[in-house]
Length: 388
Image (cartoon, rainbow, N blue to C red; front, side, top):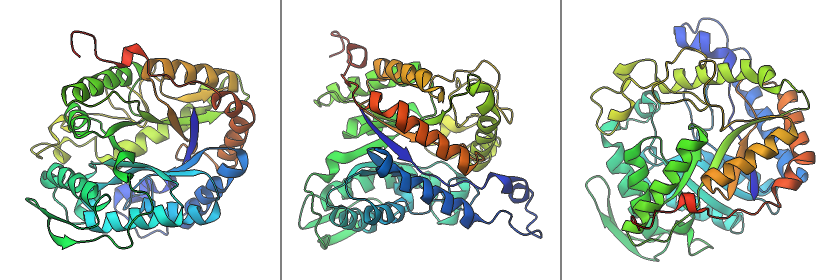
């Protein structure tokens, strides 16, 4: 199994100031410190033996703070020699697809083909859409057309496109990419049943970004492969992004709970899940109206306090001792059939020193075991014979 490090910088201490709208006091700590720390964590990946580095796309709030994932991956392409690169995810409606195709092709060249996981998504946060002047009502159409254009631009020397939103005259992506099968590296993230189906029928393989209990994610894998079978596509395996905190402390879950609570608060604030007006009446986001969500897995009908309720499903969290984490990864592979995982080691306010120790301990005691694990596609992830 391949294991990557996922990098997203957070300035959780600024949420009270940011949410109040009172910017009369200075930003403390400054954002650049969070960026410098996350880059330092990324520099550990290759020396410690991890397989890759992945980056998200978020901007405008203290959450995530990675406004261009390909920019960060370009930075690490120059600082590494062999590890793979991936996005978790590039949000297609915020990009002009021709610009994104050019950047994908360029990163493919300078990394010598190491951009192996092109994770894409539709986006959720109202503030992020407003900032770039894109209406969420158009997001699904923009997403669908962007996939069309990326598939054309990255496989054909000359192409054109006539859509509802994008109208592209005959042109070429220059420079042409080094790798000629880049669309096969597209992975689609989804949080709703409609997005899951759209991605599956388009042929995008699933990318799960740590927001569902494993049992639900496992059911989604089977559903993806049902849709793929209906489209005449072969079954596939997902990749998963999972929050990770590795420690020798026996009470690891208790020790990490405060960080998990802050992560849940940050997710709710960034995406606006606490305010149903952010989603009511927005075309394509009906499933989000009134929905409460967390950075970590909970059932979809759970209440949404600032921290997740006690007893909620934490099966998607890799928190514990090395032995506990190994067992959970093995269990997760059996349930979800994933063949690659990306660890998110910085729980928002988790200090850099703690995140670094966690990454190093995982590398010493977990990574050698997990990288040897077989990653079969289990029968539970396939359509039942009657559905095939």
